[in-house]
Length: 361
Ligand SMILES: Cc1cc2nc3c(=O)[nH]c(=O)nc-3n(C[C@H](O)[C@H](O)[C@H](O)COP(=O)(O)OP(=O)(O)OC[C@H]3O[C@@H](n4cnc5c(N)ncnc54)[C@H](O)[C@@H]3O)c2cc1C
Image (cartoon, rainbow, N blue to C red; front, side, top):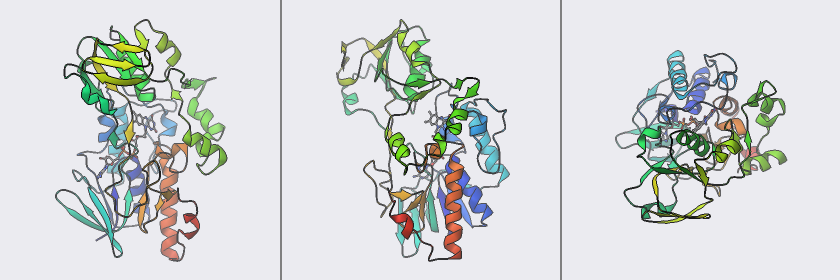
């Protein structure tokens, strides 16, 4: 039996592994994918980070690029691989955990082929789980190619003809931008009243300003944090106003329904769409964890990663504590908090989450 099992070998799981190594714990990571960096490699080909190098450091090893540089997805995957090598992090790949429950004072984790046991578990399964697509997508003709942003790589996946991009988040506008450069009509469905912020302001990166004004350290428990964590996020780095003004980009409002080749939007009905990219986000999935309490948004209730089940922790959730919690450079603070918590609990078993419990959300 291991002291700890970390589920997920992304940046959150690796940061936790770094701290457990420092604490000399006997642990492994189990991961559903077959290699380190897989979630990044699966994202679209032209993806560049919106965070520059100096905001991408994991604990104990800096991102190996110059300050102000925006890495691509391959560079992120390669950094994560080097991180694993440097700290000799033990990872068992191809093990998707489909059941986790507590039995007496240890946890049982089940995948299709294995059963694992550990005294403690850190679930670092990422902020994005089940891709969400509106239910009426099943009514759309098979002649129309439909891809969720999770599987979008580049415009070569599309057939010739008009294309619809649905979703006004970072993924939606970046994909819209790329497809609008391929000499075709592109319909954009989503809110056009989006706030977008350039990557550099007055010669400094946006993240430099975020840090300067304290935005990255505002906790979700503070008055401002409560407002920020519930509000929409601005688009970073894409000039949305100019993009939506392009001659071949047509804004159609929200997508309401579909019937074969007919797509119904707030701004009318169109029949000529040959491809759809759904950049409509993800839903969390923690149903496979028995005994954990979920909040209204279906995320596990926790205080800074400490859950209602003793010995079960979470890391990498959006706004686990701050805006930075689900970013490369921000996750280390949360991992450090958990590591301190685990250490204190060991020194003094009465140091429990009683005081934290009041703030479980
Ligand atoms: C398009 C896009 C662009 C982004 N750009 C940036 C950026 O510029 N800068 C930045 O800092 N952040 C960025 N992020 C946010 C964030 O850094 C990434 O989402 C990052 O991948 C999250 O890391 P993670 O370790 O929490 O989860 P993931 O990287 O998703 O890793 C989770 C791991 O858990 C495994 N897993 C999941 N469920 C199970 C299971 N049941 N059993 C076993 N294994 C499981 C998965 O296989 C995966 O390897 C971006 C995100 C997206 C989607």
